[in-house]
Amino acid sequence: MESILAMIREKLSPLINRLREKTLGAHNENLDLLVDSFYKLTPPQRSTALAGGAGLIVVFILFSIVLYFVQVNVLQTDLDKSMQAIATFRSLKMEDQEISAKFDSLVEGINRKNKGFSFKPFFEKLSKTLNLEISSVSERDAPLDQTDPLTKKVKVVNVEVKLPKVSIPKLLNFIVELEKSNHLLKVQDIKVTGQYGNKLYFDAQLVIRGYAAGT
Image: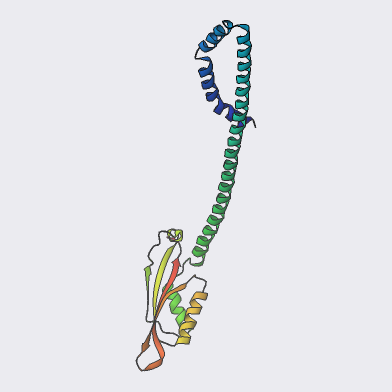
């Protein structure tokens, strides 16, 4: 309340000073002139002047009271908006901290899962387990997405794997097993080409998205 009153006084002080200067003059010369003029009036004129002056004082007091409450209302509105803005800021800050903590946890999890991980040995071992032939495994850095903060913390890699003469059931099993692995692998693209005169086996080319620990 003291802070609000101080703000009101600060806002009203220039206005009151201007009103006083216009009414009384810079050096109270208007007041001296008014007093001299008052004593030159006849008694009935003095009574009328006093009544008019009293009326002006009442009007001025009422105006000051109205102005005071208007300023209080304006300040209260500003205060409410400020408190609401502070509450919104605190809420957004807490939300940002929660999201940042989840992001840091995600980065830590990727680095932990893929520490020392190599793509080619992994796919060669998986192909042997599933009795599949892999003709080639090649890696290249994935195009950077500047809007994705994850690409600034970990290295994103696209791995191209070619499977010659593979059946559809074994191909599906291969995809399921690699995505079930603990290395956050995901098939981004797949191309299946039929073999001439063979309806059971196909040539498959897969693009698999993966992460390398750290950058």
